[in-house]
Length: 285
Image (tube, rainbow, N blue to C red; front, side, top):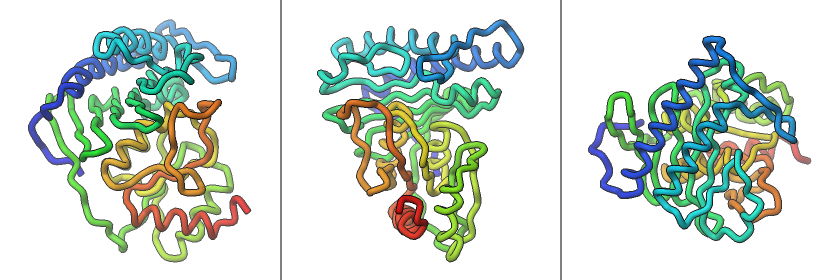
């Protein structure tokens, strides 16, 4: 849970929060225009995934403003050229519209993801949720903040003890029909009640910070800009995101930016439950 607090006295946060708030407003206005039926440009990229005018508009805005905050740092963005990334020891990682398909289907579960990569590790992260007018922000080394830019109110994360008697909330993508997910859930059902929480994109990480998802398994592909911010924020509260053989994701250190499967967990008890279930599921035998 998050409790009210004073604004953090941190230069990077102070610089980035108003920029991300403006980017969120741009994205929200694009979404409202799209839902109202206004003329709206949607294209297909070379990998057959969609890209909209909203993705490109927010990308342009953030590239421009990140260059003023840290002119020495390159930006590895989904919507920009990152062919030189192998030479980047430090960089920003950006997804200007995480959940483009949610956006197109008029579901408000889309986000803006921004993180700072240093020597393949994520050290700082922001996830903004335009339709809720909030953002989650912080360093991996300290408890994260939530900022409501509609209320201009700051909150800080307050850890809560794990309740072994509560239903375990499993985060899944909309229409998750792959039988691997049910095979993963089945061993947990032997000991705990399960509640399925369906949501799109990195919004699931925000739900984890809010205590609305405990475990988020993912057995189909994502990209690095989809997970970097969420992983960092989860690590800051004592949770994490790991490969299926229990290694934290590293960033900008492989030939591809595509991720393999992963399990995200809210705390260490959830990690134990999740990987025990994975071992019993037989999914990857």
